[in-house]
Length: 316
Image (cartoon, rainbow, N blue to C red; front, side, top):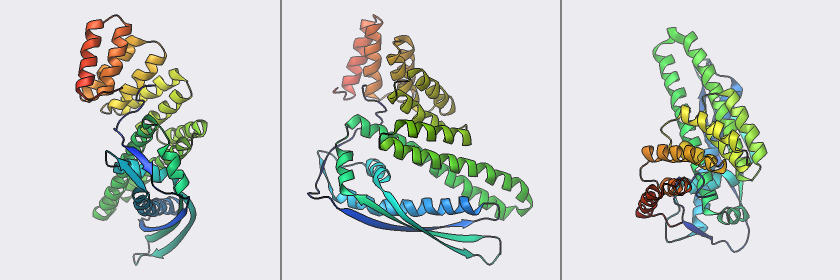
């Protein structure tokens, strides 16, 4: 498998901790619950923010205990590693009513552990695997940020137009499903991180059931099906992901890889061409298209692609 889900060029890392140690971090944050939200979802939102605060603290520890050879460790890799190895050991909630009698301030405090042995396990993964996990996490965090922004916008609308409360309450209910979908996807990411592909696939399916328009869920489940050697299912999921998010070149690139596994080199060429159209500086897409064109007897086109891949820095 060549550069599967290779969205980022990763650095070479070396753990600098000599002995294993477990560090505990505490993160706190709050969420203001509106009258149209359920207490359960509001608490989960507060917990998500608190966990993010704990991850940021743990990320400093990880960065300080990791040496970098030749390059800086990307922030995205630190976030992905932290999210994968951070273990929540306790969650506490503090609820405080607001003067309007309709809203609550929910403050969540989480305690989480980081085991330095888990850092070593991450560093022992191959570059392609780390790239794959980072790419998945980046897309998930974008989806979470977009959903947070939508909730904030709904609260502004509610404050500005209380007469539209009924309509806005329906939108809150819809966004709750989007939130729960992303929560399932975040949990799927942890299963994937730890090599439980079947568990991760099942959680992605739950995420899709909650939000059939969750492009990231289809993309990640497609990657899981690829790992499980179910290439037809992988193609089907990448088809859906590409339809929902046609601006993400990885959906086309990954579908191309699945088509290669199915020995459908013509469709693979089309997919890698689609990826190149969106991201003309992706060396891996040129390289893989070169291989497919060679298999189809297009030796001139193959050499052109190979030259372009090398010009863009391909060293595989």
